[in-house]
Amino acid sequence: AQKVTQAQTEISVVEKEDVTLDCVYETRDTTYYLFWYKQPPSGELVFLIRRNSFDEQNEISGRYSWNFQKSTSSFNFTITASQVVDSAVYFCALSEAEGTGRRALTFGSGTRLQVQP
Amino acid sequence: DGGITQSPKYLFRKEGQNVTLSCEQNLNHDAMYWYRQDPGQGLRLIYYSQIVNDFQKGDIAEGYSVSREKKESFPLTVTSAQKNPTAFYLCASSPRRLWDGYTFGSGTRLTVV
Image 1 (cartoon, rainbow over the protein chains, first blue to last red):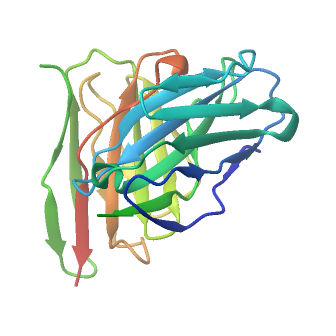
Image 2: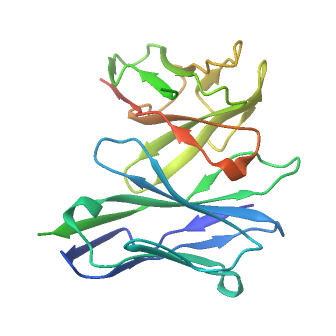
Image 3: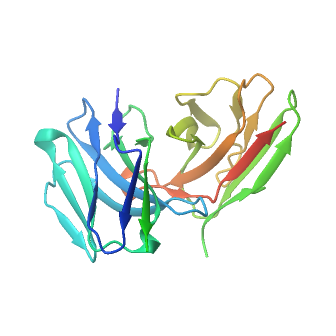
């Protein structure tokens, strides 16, 4: 069975601090996809990034960066120079790539990030 | 603009009543999903559907029912058998390939009194 663990329930930082959100996953699939979503107070989840299990390159997008390490089954998310607008709940998610198994994303429990001014 | 519409945003029901949550998409996506969100528990999969007239149970299907008579619509009924129905319900859709990820609706907050 697939499982996603986000051990950090809540993180509070002061604006301009860097913060890393951890994500550890379990799967027996050899090919899979990983995602990060952001849930602002409005409630709707917003897609941030996806990663294929064959692509271990780290990615940077502005103040956001992602570190995918297959050897430790982790897909961590770092926000550099955090801003108040980054305050939200962040979810990591996993799915098998293709095939006849479960065709849906499995989500972690989420990490609530509060950025204080 | 294409998207997913969930209605209503807030819903109040008396204990013992069935209630149906609406989810409509105009993205031409094949697959649709229902998740339940409780504080500290993330999103848990209730039901999902890959094609019209077919759907599969997720991790917490007991007390819920769905139908998929049209590609655009995937309503969720919360029945009186659901022991603790108060929660935030999110609907999502995706193309057949999960690599394309989900598009989510804005959610329905159900409160049973």
